[in-house]
Length: 330
Ligand SMILES: NC(=O)c1ccc[n+]([C@@H]2O[C@H](COP(=O)([O-])OP(=O)(O)OC[C@H]3O[C@@H](n4cnc5c(N)ncnc54)[C@H](OP(=O)(O)O)[C@@H]3O)[C@@H](O)[C@H]2O)c1
Image (cartoon, rainbow, N blue to C red; front, side, top):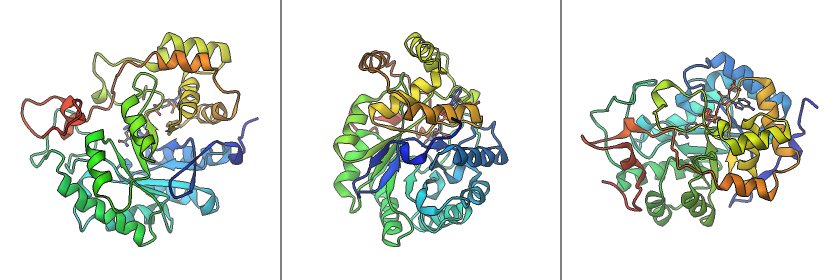
């Protein structure tokens, strides 16, 4: 079979009662996929049965993806976009969302995320060493001003669910305390070597669905996002041996594990063979309990997208962005 019936794809039920396909296609081309190629992948993914697309203004391709999405009835799709870091200002949120909607050619978005909790500007593709002169730590009062505009998007009927991305437990606790409209989703890095069990359990316990980015371990990420200590999920002996037993690529094992664990992975692929295999992986025979336990045991706490460009003070390390000791780093 070279297509998958979208009705057979597992779904997550959000706190609104809405149902979201439990796998989506990522659309960030990481500098090596141009907008035309990405739009062609979205068209191919629609044909093979994907109905969930993870978009963002900063990916620079929403205007190419929009015409492709028009081929399918809107209510059959789950379309997400994200507010970029230089648009956190109160006057910028609604126009930015409207721009993404116009580019994507939709009357509403199913989900709209604050892409990062930090409001820095940095040029697309810049080196991880570059620092914005107006870089700031997380300032909750300011984030809430942005969030009030996100809430307004829901009030206006432009967006059905609002979400966060790249958050930590201390930041989410403050948001959950102060939000009028709770986040329905949190997009976070999740793959077998970076399982974030505490944050995963925290969001689930608070009625927030985790969307897992870089679910295959982002093997083709740009050089600037690589450090010598990074590990490679798809070369892990546990993943490779399950893949060999099932006769699939190790990437497919990562995707099956993600959906069975309870997150919603959004793998990027521009190759039909690969995005089809990922989708087929989530509707075929599940991994065994033994497989799931074995993969739970290979977490390496290996964060790949470290976010260095957001550092706001001399002498900091990227760990400061992630509140590792359970308190906000100021
Ligand atoms: N919220 C955030 O801050 C944030 C950050 C990063 C990413 N994201 C989102 O998450 C999405 C996915 O993350 P990502 O692109 O970093 O990493 P990823 O999905 O883990 O890895 C993508 C790479 O894996 C390869 N691949 C996928 N399926 C495969 C298969 N079955 N067999 C062999 N190779 C396979 C693809 O190559 P081929 O194209 O050759 O198949 C692609 O280059 C992004 O596109 C974006 O939408 C969000």
